[in-house]
Image (tube, rainbow, N blue to C red; front, side, top):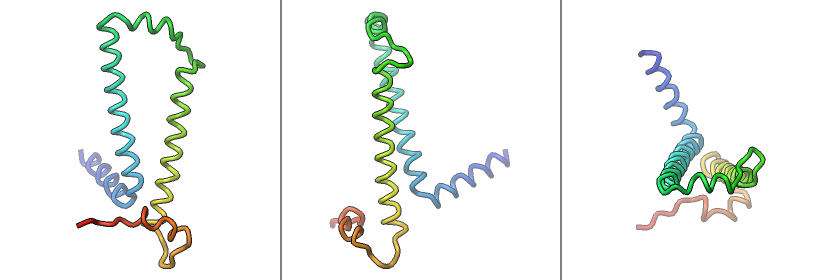
Length: 117
């Protein structure tokens, strides 16, 4: 049990230092959980009303089916876009130098958090 505590302490310290990794993992976990729950509910409803077997025959799902490739490619593209935007915000918000660049000045409203109140 003591090794388990040491590992969880190491992981939590790592995530505290690397906020971007923590944010990405939390977001990925939430999206994955909601996707699995939604797919399970949809499967259960289709199975309960007896439409799943006919839908499965009509779609003819195989490894090279466009019904599988297009959503996977879209998910990959969205993940890459989110990664690039996250890296840009991380480096220009948390790791910026003391001198402001023209890129920072152009995105100043997005990068700096303005609190209303």
